[in-house]
Each structure stands twice: as C-alpha cells, then as structure tokens.
Length: 69
Image (cartoon, rainbow, N blue to C red; front, side, top):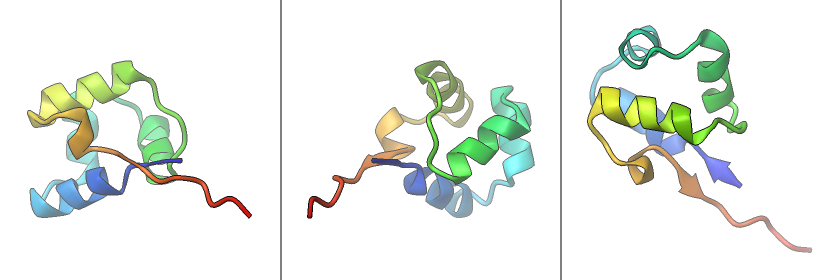
C-alpha cells in the first residue's frame, strides 16, 4: 500500500496549509482528499506537488507492505 503520511508530515513541518498547496501545485480539492485517504493519484499529480514544494517523490510517499495472513 502507498501511504502519503510523509506528505502530511511535510505540510506540518513546513507550516503549509492544504489550501496553499492546492494553489501552488494547481491540484483540486478532490485530489487532496485522495492524498488524505491514501487513494491512487497519478504521477502527474506527484510531479506537480514536487515542483511546487521543491521536493522528491520519496519525500511525499512511502510503501507499506500488505500484511499476509
């Protein structure tokens, strides 16, 4: 599973509001909602956020292996 927890932490660390990121990156509220719930977003969106925040994709997301029973 892909988690966007590092992205959430970055916003806190940089003292950025989600609405500011929406404007800087040119993404929609629906896309931000997907990031908040760890849903799929395209690499195009990741690219926009990286350009706006001057960061690398690995700073926005992490891979969490699925638990196998």
